[in-house]
Length: 129
Image 1 (spheres, rainbow, N blue to C red):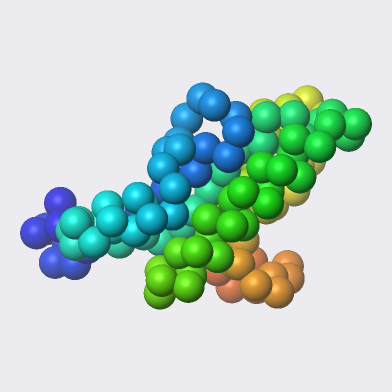
Image 2 (tube, rainbow, N blue to C red):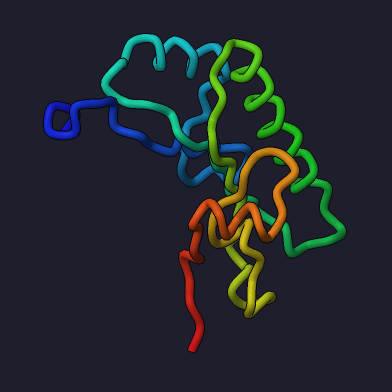
């Protein structure tokens, strides 16, 4: 695929911040080592999935977000700047029928506005009738 494109293939890496289903549970140093080993792919985005964001009495989401931000910060310190950061939670379809673009599309890591998102040509993963 890289040979056909003539450049490294972009990908998004899912960080397991506590959902314990999918994503890597590797720490930032392990991720950095893997990035060093593979020059045929380019880290374009980082994402995580919340286990209980709909439970407002739980502190789990705050802990997951802190872990995700810590991984992102360590990667940035090492010079790895993912263009996109994503977060999601599994009950967003039931609880928020219209959803938030940050949960169903993509957002820029800093100071993102609706205008920025339109420029980035993002679109929701989900759609409603």
